[in-house]
Length: 407
Image (tube, rainbow, N blue to C red; front, side, top):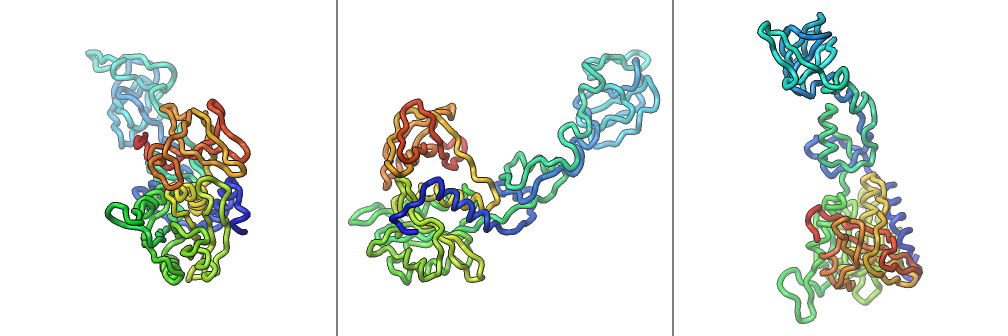
């Protein structure tokens, strides 16, 4: 595969995802408190009925037979009550408490009165036990609640705890490293005299973390020599499943990434993608020092193009490495026209309206610019040979933004 035969954008995403899925590592069990953001490696099944026993949803009385009822005790949450053995009896019951065996109804405290003889009168509401929860009402024992590949969030952690889990089976989080190439880059101060500030070293690790990777090291600027490139990549191979590099993806006089990959015996999975911006990107499989293959994603040096390479190749790869499904692209309505790019897919930075259903292109979207990216929620996807008019449906590739951050 050469730069003269760029890969279709959708195919590139699929190839990256399938490569990651084929390289999913094993399974580890981690405590519930550490599971947020990880991925279920096995289906989450209930260990017992949910709820496990009949439960009161009210403060009041659990009664047997017709009233008035003679109180014979009290049951609080956490207790195991004795059965009600006679008609005309009841127990005081608290919300969350186990309903005694043979109870025929629950009566709310506000719907009851207690006579001078101590007996309770009242009317249950709408049915035999309308104010309680029956065993298995939420889920039956052994029922699959979430399939393998589900990203874990706080709500799923809560469900797992409700089921009685202390740990969850997850896939190991992919380990990533970042190598920043370019003698022209500054890591501090303002740009000038032919040198520019590195904007990718500070931001790429955050994108990687939002896609589920852990970032072990950020190295750079790496000198523009083949030896320096090889040394940096070999060092990263010791600990990373994925190495991202910035710059050097073309074949200019100081672009040493392709020669370095050849020296390392790498195999290209994708070498250039038919997408604008972001064309000169790559994904390769590199032999690791332990014999297990690693991945290297070559991101262009222009900042917006680098982010497009991330969403095109790195995000699908990381989804696969975590055993997650490749997310489908939602369809939104174009808020204004979006031009096509001939035989290339056009990823146009766009902001969503408050409903999340309309995407309007933003300004400042040159491949070397980041202002547009900072005002966008993702990319409108205009396929090759097409253009999008205002009001047309258009696929939308969202960025992994934290809710409430933008616009």
